[in-house]
Structure formats: C-alpha cells, structure tokens
Image 1 (cartoon, rainbow, N blue to C red):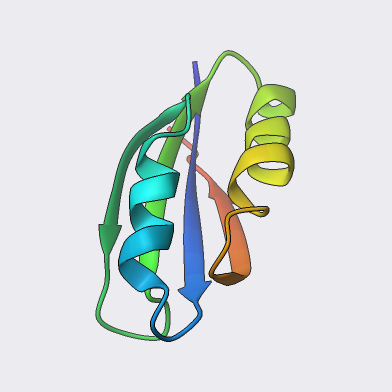
Image 2: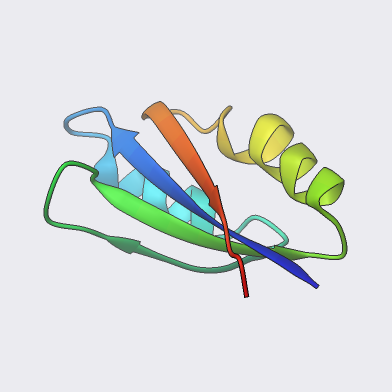
Length: 76
C-alpha cells in the first residue's frame, strides 16, 4: 500500500464543511485541522501512487472550500 499526506489550505468560513467532505472520501484514512502554515491534512492510503493521484485530483481538490494542496508521499 502507498500512503501520502496532503497538506491543505482552506478558505475562511468553509473549514468545517470542507474537512467533513474530505473525511468522507474513499481512501482518506484520517483528516484533521492543523495550527501552522496549513489549515488541515489528510492521510491517504491506496494500492498505488496513481490511485493516490486520482483521489487527490478527482476527489480532494474539487471539495468546496479548498484553496491549495501540497502532497507528500510517505517514504517508509
């Protein structure tokens, strides 16, 4: 299994709605708010990096209230 952490910047006033939407996406193992330069993160797990890419592009990035994402593939 491949894993990736997606760091997310959210639009003000849309944070809670966006995070709940992210949590409901298949492949998202967990998602939480953060303090710091990013507003939230999502841990994604899938069979391949290609599947992770599809989850991010087709499901996460289209969530209303998401401004930007940064994806970090887990190395171990």
